[in-house]
Image (tube, rainbow, N blue to C red; front, side, top):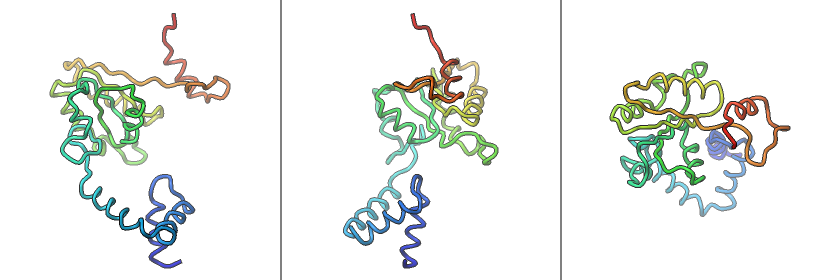
Amino acid sequence: MTPAFERLQRQLKQLPGLGYRSAERIALHLLVEKPAQLPALVEALEAAAAGVRRCERCGNIAEGELCAICADERRDRAVVCVVEHVPDLVALERSGAYRGSYHVLHGKLSPIQGIGPEQLNLASLRARVDAGEVTELILALSNDVEGEATCHYLTEQLPPERGVKVTRIGFGLPSGGGVLYADSVTLKSALDGRRNYS
């Protein structure tokens, strides 16, 4: 292959979820099979790079100061769901089960990977809490060591005088799933998160 093709393939391979073969297929598709699509894709990428940024309040993607969720007056701003990444926010929105606001940390604490509180989007969350607009934080972080450490850190950083209620999303068996095929961590989470049935 040509050096330009290999460079494109290397760049595509760096995208999440794309391996060598997928990057090669996409590069061939754009350059050989459908070259007419390439200018529109390049234009869309340039426009997104120039216009899309982080929401100043929550860290979601936005084209202005605030994202569409933060700008929506119908959302409950007092209840804030804290997530690790924007795709987590998208998944919660897609469910239609939540009508509050969000806060995207853009990661979780991981000393092994060199990610401390300074690398996370914590300053604007603290500002929201200090302003008195938050009554509840829903921690929707992953159920692993780093997620738990991040939840603990966030709880410790909350000023007690604010009276902010902190909750954690439930973990356990998926709908339609059975006990037989669940791993031990999932079963422990399901037992720990049990609630009254009657």
